Length: 192
Image (tube, rainbow, N blue to C red; front, side):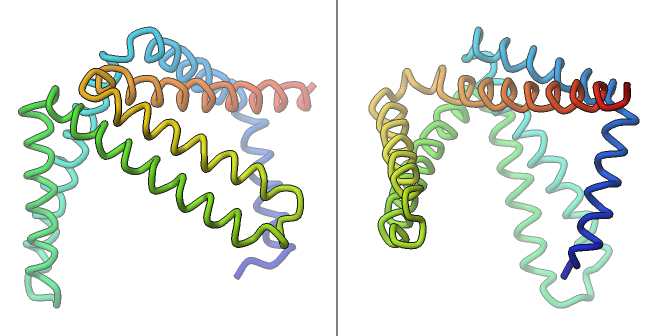
């Protein structure tokens, strides 16, 4: 467990790193924001790019897993590791071979995720409304928003597959970029 002093030192080191490299954070933030805007302007392209990216990630991690599993073939759990790595290679291959169909599948998974997340958030809010005092209503609203997003995505299938992943990736990139830009500008200001 991290003591308060260690946490304070880590926080100070992180602040110093941001101050020293604020230009890199600014560049990365601008790049992410531009990619986010591009994804929001062209969500079908961003959805397709996401499916292809995930395909490559699964394929590379699966191949790496097969190599490591081969090297460690005498260790316990060899067969489970082998199956896991082979499934990653298979998933990556399918995503790369049929990226348009993969976008539809990923959209269905996304819709199911938002539905489950919304129900879980609502249940958490209701169960902890006494401890959370006034904040529980925000959690309740967030849960209903998740469910609404889920229904928009699922009810709109198959046409929602064109935009859903791209829009959500775009929003994520845009806000992540804006956060990095804000951090970099604040660090630059504290340097002067």
